[in-house]
Image 1 (cartoon, rainbow, N blue to C red):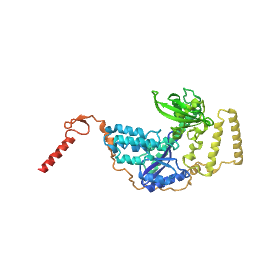
Image 2: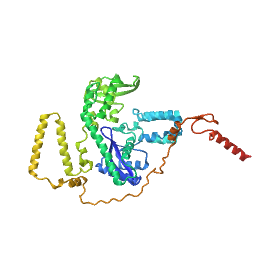
Image 3: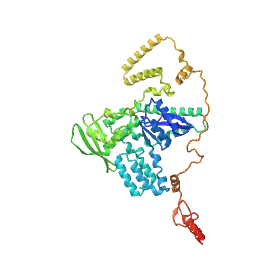
Length: 484
């Protein structure tokens, strides 16, 4: 069967699985059913951005179900086709591919600048008549990053590499020969591995103090806000704002707003880009023309450069999204009931709420021994009162009853599962993988070249027996024989 995981990014920038499904075939109807079921499981909350490859059935299903989401195509799947769609030999297209890559991956240009540069590039490379490039240009707003620069955190995922990584992770514990029960056991093992990684990173963020050699006040404040993984990225932006950015000019303050021109240099301290940053002295808000905060969810080096100039020592509240905070996850996500997705009834909701309240209080009173002792005494009084009102333990606390409550199924229920019919999905073909011209060119480039005795060139794809000149000579001789 076709396994379809829904993969995203957590607050440690690790892959997280939001759900998964097994399909009989890869049709529009199957994908529509899967997406509708996924939407129902998440209380009809649609994702902001959905990233897929160029599968036609998946594209129609996404547009039909996630009508409020932005659908984006994987850049990697499109860019990797360039050698095959333009010419077979990759070596002859290195400059061409480098020029196209440099343009389409540019995050700082506007859509108008992209269109102007694309047309100039196609004219310079004489590719105006290439049908595939023209088709990709027609759907440029579905895959080129500059068309998504206004979407919040659009740069967290630009390719389906995280989905491919997730598929590879599931394949590590499972194979196509597993039965359905075996596969589900392997699936649970993989998900438990993700949960373990998340718990470990949570522990490191809460207990390990990151290194701060510069000892900048705004850096210390960032270390208290963000998870350890994201703090390292924010720390780089702070340092680069101090080292590779400087203020070229500024305008006088008007209605509390100052506008700065920030020059961005490279490692050789040569100017490469200019960005405009506006700073509001009233609420310390900033707006940069690179739109780094919109794209990534944290401030860019240009904003930190302006903050340093204006002696702002803390990140303003409006730039502290819960998306990256270390305490954004409630403790109940690691509970047993959540592991089996059985926390939707009223009893489980109340229990989880009680656990969260206790943990929030203990976290708030950390290192305050007096208040913690007082809180412990109050909880003991509540426990003693509950034990007086309910003196005996209920029968529902038996092991079998607890498991039945977790699974939300009666203890004596009989379950029968029939094996699915044999399925052949798209591209299953034979056991031999098809190799495209781009990959063939890469393999040929690694071969040792030798001199062809006919064309007198150093090549690796033919010799004097199958040279193009020999074939042309044979065809000419055959044509001359027929004419005689």
